[in-house]
Image (cartoon, rainbow, N blue to C red; front, side):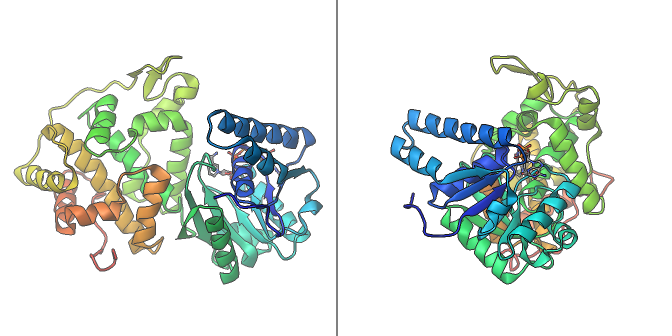
Length: 412
Ligand SMILES: NC(=O)c1ccc[n+]([C@@H]2O[C@H](COP(=O)([O-])OP(=O)(O)OC[C@H]3O[C@@H](n4cnc5c(N)ncnc54)[C@H](O)[C@@H]3O)[C@@H](O)[C@H]2O)c1
C-alpha cells in the first residue's frame, strides 16, 4: 500500500542502471524520498526518463493512477555529486558487478555518509570481503534484489562476517516496509536462489549429455509434471547462456568445486559458438522474431535403462511429488531434476546458508517454483527422497547424488 511521503531521511541509490532504477521505483512507491546517483548527468537523466516511461506504462495499463505516478516521481531526485547522499539512512550500491569498482564505491559512500547503513546489491561477490576492503565492514550488508525489482517480491539480506546487528535489523525492516519479503542468508556463493536453482539447469543439461531426452522434451516435462512456470533451457536462453555459465563457474569454484555443481561442457560449447540465447537468436533453441523456437542442441538418443530399484524409487517419488501422470521417461526426467534441487537445498541448509523456511520462501519467490524444495521433500517423504538419491547415485561416477546428513528435525 502506498503511503504519503515519509518524514524521514532519504534512501540513496548509487548506480542508476537496470537494478538501481527498479529499486528507486520500489522505494519511492512505498513513500520514501530517494536520491539516485550515477557518474554522469546523461546517465541520471536517462535513468529518470526510464522510470517515467515505466510509470507511464503502468498508468496506461490501469495498474496505478496518474496521481500515484506523479507522486512517486516527485520523490525521486537525481545527482552526480556523492556528497548529496550525506544524510541518507540507507544507501544501496548497485553499480557494475566488478569487485574493485564496488570496493571504491562502497568506501566513498561510507566516507560521505558516516552514519548510513550501506547495502550492496551484488549477485555474486563476497559481502564480507567487500566490507573488509572498503573499510566499513560493520555497516555493509548485502541486499540482493531480483530483476525486475518492482515486480519481484524477494530480497535476500546477506549477513557479512562483520555486519552489525543493527545494520541487519534496519535493512530488514526497511525492505519489509517497502512490501518486500526478506530472507536472511549467510555470505555464501550464490546466496540461496542462485545456488539452489543450479541443479534445475545442470541436471537438465546432464540428461542432454546422457542422450536421454531433447531440450524441448525436458522443458515440457518439467512444466507439466513439476508445474515449473518455465523450463530450464528456455529460461537460460532468456537469461543468456553466457550469464548462466559464468554464474555456475563462480559458484562452483567458490564452493570448492563440488561435483554436484560442476559446469557442463555442452552448455559451455554453446558460448564458444556464440550461441548465447535469445539475444543472439540462438542458444539451446533457435529463436525467430515472433517468439517461435526449435531445439538447437542435437542429441544422439540412448534408450533409457533403469534398474528395478531405480524404477521403483522414481515411481514412489512421483506418486507423492506430483498429481500429473506421465511416461516412465517423463517421470525419470522430473524426479532426477527435482531430487537434485532438493539435495542442493539440504546441503545448503546443513552448511548454515539459511533456514529451511527461508530456503523455501526464496525459491518460491525468486524462481517462481510452485513449492519450496523442503516443502516438496516433506510432501514426498524424506525416506523416499533418500531412496531415489541412493539409487541415482549408483548410476553415476561422480557421487553427486550423495545426500548430506539431514533429518526432518532440521527441516523445521
Ligand atoms: N540485472 C540483474 O538481473 C541483476 C539482478 C540482481 C542483482 N544485480 C546486480 O545489480 C548490480 C547492478 O546491475 P545492473 O544490471 O543494474 O547493471 P547496469 O549496467 O544496468 O547498471 C550499472 C550502473 O552503475 C553505474 N556505475 C558504474 N560505475 C559506477 C561508479 N563508479 N559509481 C556509480 N555508478 C557507477 C553505471 O553507469 C550504470 O548506470 C550488479 O551488482 C548486479 O550483479 C543485477
